[in-house]
Amino acid sequence: MKNNSTFEFGTIAGLILGVLSIFGSFLLEGGTLGALILIPAMLIVFGGTIATAMIGSPAKIFFKIPSFIKLALIPPKFNVVETIETIVNYAIIARKDGILALEKEVNNVSHPFLKKMLRLAIDGTDPETIREIADVEINYITERHMANATVFQKMGGYAPTMGIIGTVMGLISTLANAGGDPNELIRHIASAFIATLWGVFSANIIWLPIADRLKAIHAEEKILLEIIVEGVLAIQAGEVPTIIKTKLYSMFPISEQKIED
Image (cartoon, rainbow, N blue to C red):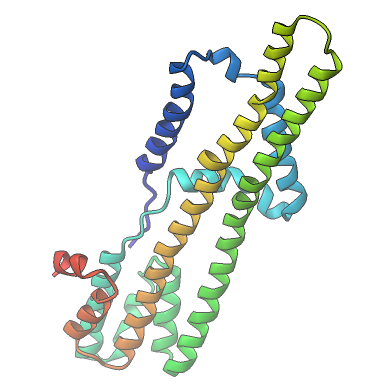
């Protein structure tokens, strides 16, 4: 039972659609690509955003930002259905031969959380203690994942501010050279606002969506962990395998329960 990673086409499609919608409309209105690709403005926005993230985040989290971006693009595939079927099979064995019969099965379990919960049940740990241990681990996992997502949330807040800083700097430079060609002055003012564009764009198309994607991945994993806890406790209680299966699938929406019947 493995949680394989799969390329998230929806994330890439959304990014492409966002770029085409925003920049494409700019080009359709008569703008030019050269006006958008302004290196100083992009440097202020992206460099400043990364710098503020570096200042405000622990180093161990900051240096994992590339891996978090990769995780958002290639998220793990949580095999919830396969996990339920595995738990039901273990319930059948335990129902027939006793829970100690799972001793020889537990070493073949690939999911570390399921292996831990099964080991606790086989060792005779009382259900309340098993649930307490599970809750502690799930809570710590949640805290770690939320901390990872928070980095991108903060970057989504920093980026527009960096854009405003870039725009202000551009306007200061432009006004300092006022008195020359009015057309040239107007062109420089327009260029100054490109920094604001990049700041708002990067916040709402890159950083904040990545934060939301990481939260969604965590929510999927949390459901899997909760299913494992309920399944193992049901096995320990000696419940009928068909009841266990029904109970675990009841954690899905009704439409998905029908699909998996």
